Length: 392
Image (cartoon, rainbow, N blue to C red; front, side):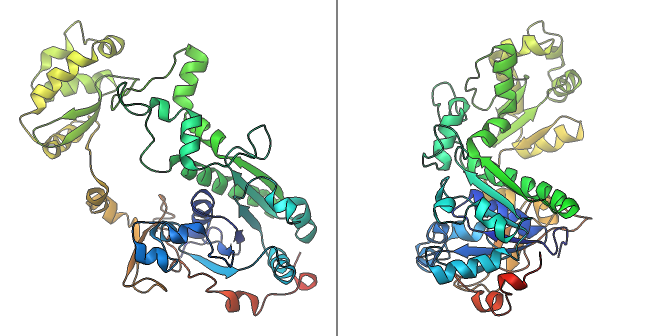
């Protein structure tokens, strides 16, 4: 087990994706993550996913995706006795993450200022759609709402099909990642000085930050970003190309890569053609260049071209489906997935995806499968000290 965050206790009060994904990253790195769930059904993601049977068992596929490695307790934050229990738990915690609408925790009497009285060094992370301040702070927000407001949808697709949403909850995921590394950074200060922190994570701002290139092109160069389908606006040829079998992404962004590509596909004269001789000219003549390249690629499948191009130093890769990439030797060798033979509420084994980093050559994997609702009540509360007994 990876121990980068060993000894760190995190309370996860979150639902659905951004917050649970944030806390999952911390669990993978060794933190003791306690998922605090409402008795009325817990995390909504327990009821979401492609399997109705799992949804009914409150172990939906969406929940299983980012809750391994956590322990679950059930607490009604509106109940006085449960609130006392929760505060006892806070007194033992290093960090807390929640993704309620701004103000919800404060109205419950459990906002950052109140919890600081219990645990002065607490790192409190609030993830919301728009942040804790501003005219949109109270608006409900799901991933698709943020995708639309952030501009992502306006540049996704082709000129004919845009605006389109990205095919997975990218804004939620970005909010979770920013939350996780912000918590980790605040914990460094906490351990050095004993000082806590209030982290206000806005999914909209996280998404705009990740849109660095198109935003910068507008702010610094006055270029209004537009949808370009599978083409890369920064270079040509850089995009998706048809082959004899399957699609191939090619990113010949450097001049030497373009020259090497022309030689490899048997069209060396393209590198000398005035329409394609240098980067900016190639971008203006992208359509004509793509037609020539695709004609040459039509003699072999994408897998063959991928191997040839990478061997020649030309970045290239097939366009794969999710089932295809999960069995790729590269992914298998790096141990991206973890398998649990037995999981409460799940018939048969369960495979989950870990994070995208190796630590000293080892893959951070969750120490336990996703928990059933309230599975760890006795384990956590039987030896939990009362607030006056908890360490400062």
